[in-house]
Structure formats: C-alpha cells, structure tokens
Image (cartoon, rainbow, N blue to C red):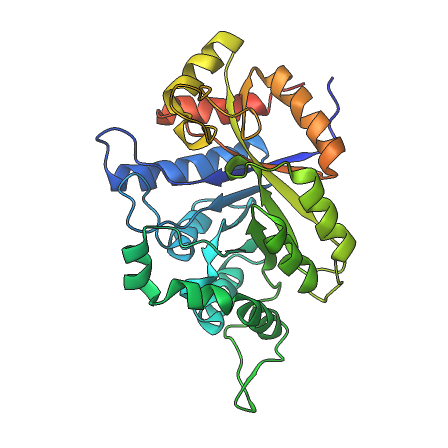
Length: 312
C-alpha cells in the first residue's frame, strides 16, 4: 500500500459548464462537498469571483451555510474571501456565525485579489488599489476581532456571535508578498501553485523563516493548491486536460503554448499524480494539498476526485 505523508483537500471554483446554468452549478457544489466528505478529504473550500458568467459564487459565506447543512464532518471554508472589498468586522461576524452553526469545521481563507474585472471591482468596493493598500491593517483587525481585543476610536467592538471554536485563519497567495503578510500576522499560508508561474519552494521557505507565532496560529502551517486532472489511464487524463486546462496555460504565444503548464496542473493516473505529490511534499515542505479540477463535465470532475483517493 502506498503510504503518503500528505492530506488532500478540495478547492471548488463553482464552475458553470455548458448550458446547465447557475442553479445547477450550485447543486453540483453541494454534491462535490458531500462526495469529498465521503471520500475522506480534509477540507472543502469555495472561491469568490465577481461578474464572471462561467463561475457561480460571488459570496462564499452564503454558499458555505448551505454546504454546512448538507455535510457533517468535513472542514468547510473560503478560498478566499477577497479582503480588499470588505470591512473586517463584517467578515469576522459572518465566519463566527458559520463557526457557531458548524463548530470546529470552519476555515476563513483570505485573499488580496479583485476576483473580477476592473469595473466590477469598482462597483463592488470603489478604489481597489487603495483597498489593497489597506490589507495589512485589515489583517491586523481580523486577528484582533477573533481574539476579542479590537477597538474602534478607543471603544471596544466585538464580533458576534462567539463560537465555541474559532475559525482557522489562512491567507492565500501566489507570491512572496502574501507569504510575508501571513508570516507577520501569524496566520496559515496557502500557496496557489495552480495560478502561479513561480515555484513555491522559495515562497514557502520565506513564510516559515519569517513566521511570528500568534494565538491564532502558534506555528507555521501550509497548504499548496495545485490543479489535478486524474483518470484511469494517462491517455484519458491528457484528453480531459486538453478539454479543460485553459486556466493552467503557460504565458506564451498561442503558437508556443503547451496544452497546459505542468507547474500548475498535474495530469495522469492516481499513481503517477501521487508520485508527483510525494516529490512536491518533500520539496515544498508541506503536508497538505488542495486540488482544483477544471474538467468541463461534472460527472468526470467527481470521478477525478474519487480516483485521487485510490492512489494506494
């Protein structure tokens, strides 16, 4: 039996495939979460996007309430709430409410990206560049709110309700800047290899070396998010990758571009992908991988996740 040193989790972009529509895509999100729980995945996270017809979730916290009611054990969270758009108090209130409904299961993943086109971002929260500049202050406020030590103009302000177990806090990113923030504020760090053109080893090393322990996270903890398309045979996996790997294409001209970037997307059988993850676990120094699968067929997407749990 192939003994691994890493856990697997799921990142769901809540894609809308074909002419199925948004409602069907949201139903499939719940189906994927239930399947992930049944298979033994550690977490199910939902991404936030705005104004994108092909992606159906602009509000992870709302969909998480739905997912939580349809699952029992799996940790559920945001991958990510896009912090520049929001005030820290509202974010912590929402996730403390979720943590009160589903104790010990909630992850608050935070990101710095706009999650949509420029005009969509401006319509959502105004000057995005100014909002990004405020992210360090907002991260500090998030930490203080979760520790009940926040004040506004000298007056204490609390985030209700207060759950029995606080949400786990993670910062998501694709470069050293996000890793620096996660380390400085004592938060877990999730490196988005599936969206990054840099190798993650140096980024994760920088995070661990600069990490400042906090009550939220006493020691550094990491997850690497990677694209995965898994099938019964290498040939079938490559066929599926050709159909659904636009997100992972290399930044080259159309003539030069490979079908997909092997840095961002792992394609193959359960055994070959598990071997790649073994090597990544050693080089990245991480014990958990979050898988995002963009096969443009809901049934085949579920099968890919099922096969990844058969890597023995």
